[in-house]
Image (cartoon, rainbow, N blue to C red; front, side, top):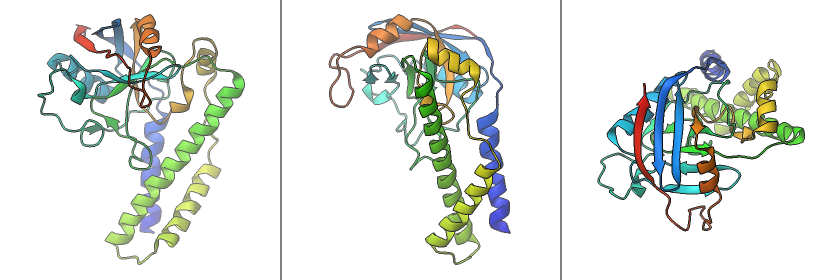
Length: 270
């Protein structure tokens, strides 16, 4: 009974975080001045934890001198790793593992071209989908066909099922230990699989909303990341700069051969 109660608690929290459609963009606008040009970003009020965290780093100048350390053409440009600053004397912990933020997955915020989203480590070690405290990426993406959108939907549903399994397995393992239920891993896995079958059988698979499908077909983006990474803003000026950065030559680790840095950041309006 304890496992079943715990199951419904964790399922409820996942559903609430993923299904919210509340989106709001007001006047939180920031400017990233880079060596490749200026990028103006509007932050969403629908993701207040990410918005306020980002504004904090802007106010403190933490992004000044940071590299765009990972660039993949037709995908995204990533920055915010404070260890890549020209001045590295910042007492901030590892930004992917130790300094993280709970996810704020809002269905109305999606990975269209120009979306600003939080980086994170992968599902296996981060089934809670917690975001990096500083690292973020800007989507470039490509224009997609209907067939590619259906492939993206399949991948999204696969990722959601994997995250559900990992969260439940961890949760049930903790309950097994705390309450001395004496279940082995195979028995826990069987219970988790039955629970997942129950919940997935009672819900329709995720489908990309019509409006977002049209955006992906005309403007482009990276829909396969929807529902599992937190989008917290959008580029309102400087998409040409995003394209310019995305097109540079990179090494085998996707690092630009010539440094591209954020020179300065500022809050333009609040």
